[in-house]
Image (cartoon, rainbow over all chains, first blue to last red; front, side, top):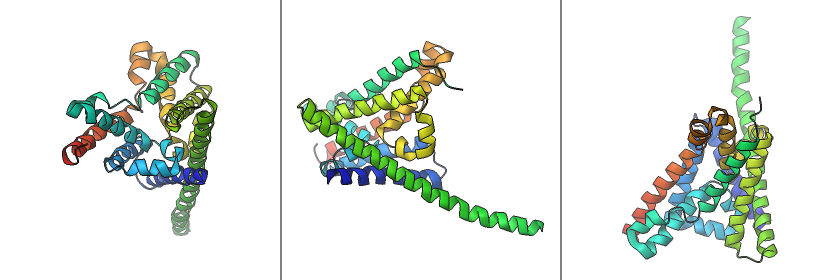
Length: 116
Length: 148
């Protein structure tokens, strides 16, 4: 059943993005930024955590989970360290994704040429 | 005759975009959903294969998706898929990796510092910037109002 929920939720998020892309002048860059902000906003009230419990990876794959992971790491550290923890823990959970993206990009940029 | 043509064009324009819009939305929904299911399958595979928690397995899954998206972008397949699926591949984490790798490959001819180094976050930078600013702001609000 979790596969169905994953499919529906991830598909639904992409559907909203596509509707915004087609019907407004906003570009893909605007939409991904808006979605990240939405993700961190939803986690302010722990809503996104509940969604992840229900739909599993379907909620972790969209870019909204990036915002959720940022605020989640920041708040986790802030519970130990107070207000400075917000700055210290910001990238705790997203470090793996960002680092992986940078490393893979660097390696592939060295070995591959731009087409056309 | 000219008037008729104009009217005809008006009617065509009125009907044509909505159809492609519906089609685009449907494709984005299905491809986005498929990426979500692949993520879930991969998470469960990693969790049972490496005997790790679901949380760690989901990190593995995201790194794998980023790797696949970067590799396919470098090989040149991913651009075609993105133009077909649009938000179905842009909104998932694959879009983040795609934007970075495509910027990296495109600008590397301008040199390692001002080409690759300066432009690698050209598209992904806005996601990180607004993600961090909003997470900091909402985190501060929650810390002050709800106490963490």
